[in-house]
Image (tube, rainbow, N blue to C red):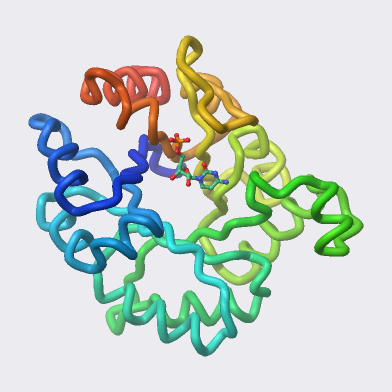
Amino acid sequence: MNAKDVIIACDFSSKEATLEFLDKFKEEKPFVKIGMELYYAAGNDIVREIKRRGHKIFLDLKLHDIPNTVKKAMRVLSDLDVDMTNVHASGTIEMMRAAIEGLTRPDGSRPLLIAVTQLTSTSEEAMRNQLLVDATINDCIAKYAQNAKEAGLDGVVCSPLEAGLVKEACGNDFMTVTPGIRFADSSKDDQVRITTPERAREIGSDYIVVGRPITAAEDPVAAYRKCVKEFLNK
Ligand code: C5P
């Protein structure tokens, strides 16, 4: 049985704004996601500071390069002691294997490694006309997830609406980490294929990634608690 948790997407543009947000949490230490914007702005400094404060970290940098480069980059990231990171599955099984090799520390431990299958912003039409991929988007997601599993990865990032498909293709133990979460009564923002925390649990998400419904809430701590309550059913 996989661990289940709510991950807050800390899509802030500076270290100060991020820490000011995290300071609001006095009782909980939420799992946080650091994406490209914050990482490129604040670098390893913010990763170390958030870790020092006792949070788990998903470093969402979506690596995609030749296997040797990804392996060496992952070696550097594994020293940062994050809890989860990711690559693009389209980099091939060989690249994903190299990522695991780079991420694995001398004592055999490593952060969780998950793969992006097809970005939720990629349509079937774009796949066909621009990428020249003739498969349906669902077949593509299932195959990329199977490739990730074959390479030894722990799971994939996908839309909550695709979590069932991934579990069917790769088994229940293969993790699904799903953004695109909204409360039933909140704004969709720019997300299209969304679902509620409760529904995400029912479909089979292991981790939900939630940004603006928490970060832009009037009371972020209350919004986080509501999310945890709905997702973990407690
Ligand atoms: O604010 P919101 O809840 O929409 O944030 C979702 C987070 O998940 C953002 O950091 C976004 O970049 C990320 N994400 C996503 N869809 C994907 C992959 C990542 O929304 N397919």
